Image: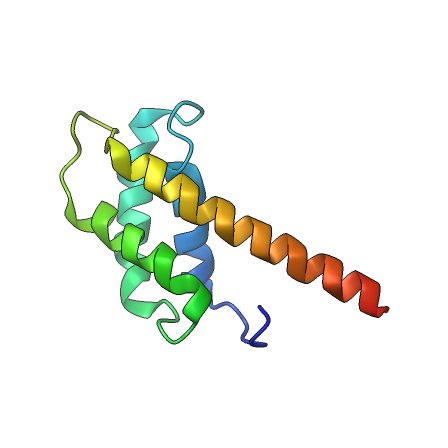
Length: 104
């Protein structure tokens, strides 16, 4: 991250769960409850002081508290997760490219 902050284990758990939740057509819905459980376990310990994580944390909290529309499906939350995860991935890619240009 540009701020120089390292991601915690809880941050990684949240990011991986949100990555899966952002792709409902590609993910087995039977595994969604496990992903929601992982979010619930990680959320109390995520890095809330990291500005780039805030949009992801906000959607993760909604997944953790909302009831699914049908088993394994949270409707528009999946689309919102895709939006914030795409923004996260684009920013991390830009950071990586910038670091490559800066040299070893």
